[in-house]
Amino acid sequence: MSINKSYHAAPNLTIQAGDGTIFSYRELGEHKGLPVVFLGHLAGTLDNWDPRVVDGLARNHWVITFDNTGVGFSNGSVPDSIEQMARGALKFIDALGLAKIDVLSFSMGGMIAQELVAIEPQLVRKLILAGTGPRGGQGIEDVAKISNWDFARSVVTFKDVKTYLFFTRTKNGKQKAKEFLLRLKERQENRDKSISLKGYRTQLKAIQNWGIAEPADLSQIQQSTLIVNGDNDRMVPTLNSYDLAKRIPNSQLIIYPDAGHGGIFQNYDKFVEAATRFLDQN
Image (tube, rainbow, N blue to C red; front, top):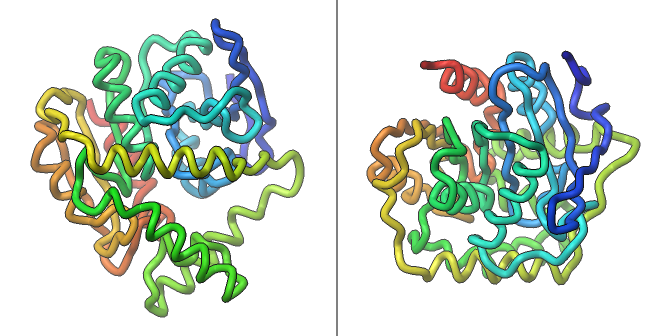
């Protein structure tokens, strides 16, 4: 069965988990093979996924994006730890009745993904970690400071904060930021609700705590893993991507030049090609 042809037109769906939590989500692509579940970034909602990435992967895969507990149209309170966010994601996945999935995660979503595979290692077949780092990774505890500083810059310059957080300040980076932000506005109707200020601050604190926590044993991740980042990630320093690749046994690494935290959006065409190839490998 084929559902929807473009992410900007995908309807907002809901499903209720066993504990009563109602999750909001969208689907794209044919219901065949394993679904690719997206795990999103700090303050990210359904409308923060680049439609070129979603549409590109949905050409050959069943794609699912969702609002985790307390985010967007999903009810409940935002969990105060990355581990609890992973457990929230597991509630959603269980509510859909999915026994096996692939995961595409970005930024905070990549942290959630690492906890998720630690809790339920048999659930995930393949793992994509973009713009993220390991528990206790270098500079991750500074995400709140960097985010707050760039938010202040965005207010003064009347620009979206993602201009600074996700992209380099080179001529190329500035142009790619403008193009990305325009793509996020393609959906005109039935847009998601923004995260609350309280929820945003709760997520920031959870990331800070993740950044100062004891490192995990990443050798336990047995999933085939694709690690992707830009070469100048200010939010989760790029060296963390190299660290992930070194510590996760069955992994491969892609670093895009002249790209920042949102390297997968800045280079969406190359990323979609690489991610599709990775997911389709036996």
